[in-house]
Length: 275
Image (cartoon, rainbow, N blue to C red):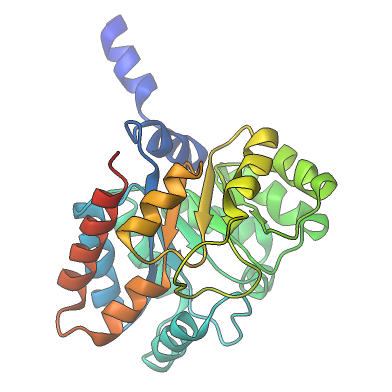
């Protein structure tokens, strides 16, 4: 193999963590966009079509939700979508098939709750995600001090366990979280659940600065971002990535053609990040 050929192979991301890093590195001076799709909502094929529309219209990564009966971090829009997906017969296996298909196009981050992981065993769960090409996972109800087993399983499977921090996270805990962080840090913009909000608080820039000061990985902001202008404001405030969920799920719930509408919204959000 020639040196140039070896260089091309070396440049291809080989692990989930590598794919996440590459997605942020290739954002060309703007924040990376990570829209959310609820796996199985309104059904599995349509959720796949929605994710494909995201990828075709400017998404750099995709957050893929697993429907769950008691989603403590989710507001009413995402909670309702998860309930509908479960009633329509969505399963973890089906959602992972959606994730595997989407992962051929962009890095996929699975969002799930800890009982789903522990019921299957952390090592087995992480390996299943890796086998599906999924790059990482977010587990909002897994406290840092209880995350060792899951974090070790993710590290062994070469996927990223994405930590969350909030406005109430104290500096010593934030430092500890940042030291263990892989992939990126998910910064929750508000105290509360997911949902659309009319504006950010003045604290967001300071919060992002606190996290960036301690982090060796990108910092992405979520909870409450719903418009292109808000996405741009998040980037201007210092976010390396912008996560949008409830606005997209609401649009899907109201649309006759969910994939087309969701794709158009993602294109608008991506345009809002161009500076």
